[in-house]
Image 1 (spheres, rainbow, N blue to C red):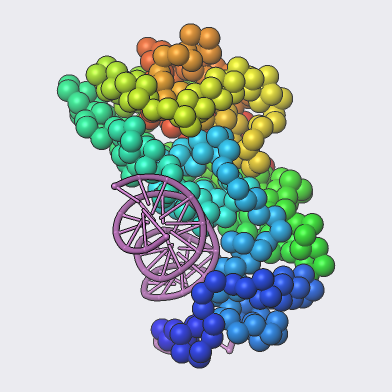
Image 2: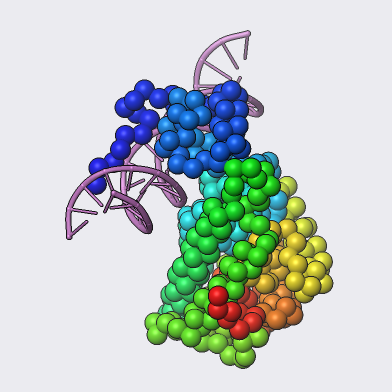
Length: 355
DNA sequence: AAGCCTCGCAACCGCGCAGAT
DNA sequence: AATCTGCGCGGTTGCGAGGCT
């Protein structure tokens, strides 16, 4: 495959963009749309390659970009999605409206990764670094971990599809004259179409439950919870203690997390049931925020929050459920069960809607 | 004050995929 | 079927700012 030269061979400018260049690019896209990125630089009078222009636009100039500090919920979402998807920043960005994949990637690498490592969590595997899965539970844990991995693959594929749809819908709606008016993930009919498609996809996903999956579920569609088999993912007592100790050592931001998460758990019960998920612009599945809160509790302090709010999963019909159903023994300081809860809570709340 | 180090972020690079020819 | 083209993604780099010695 012949790869056409980009910036290197034809003496185009590289490096930081000047305000003048930004202005040119912005003006051109506002007037004409970006069309072909390759052709854009010459049309816009820029000595840059198309790729550089695209990057500058998508990561910096796009009017629907939110810049600045990440909110606590955004941080939580990133951590959880990363646990599911790994370094698939574009897929993660799909669910953090107005944040770019590049920004999320940078934030992960410079902040979140270190923070998790500091707390004794492997930022790659999201497991406690020194033997979270130990003792006689080993085999069962490995099985359950495999199941989780399998579910993550499903989820990954689903997100991919959703991301693609999101991009397509963006392309459809992006007109030269309405650049500023187009949010990244407009809550319009396109979005609902997408959701319908996703519901259909999810329905299929249930039907096609892979033979390799060892996960089993009990209950109806509305209250799908993993059986006890999955709970073996839980941290050992000693690790849980370690977790809490670690979190005790952390100050500042981490305590802020703890504080907010408590508020979330208490406050979201009502709001989320109403179908609105605050702070998450793209409610990709119900219950996400409450699980996020629970997970943050796990990350930061397994005990202090539970006395009042405990852990909340949520059934897909919007009703909060006590996580003891999920964890079996009510143990909330279980990082993976939170993620499992996320996966489970996104099971379809309504019959598949075919387009 | 100067030099060094660390951190955060914008931008670059190379690769893979998908559609077009 | 083979090749070309355009685009997007994820990893990496380079640079400026701020902190430390």
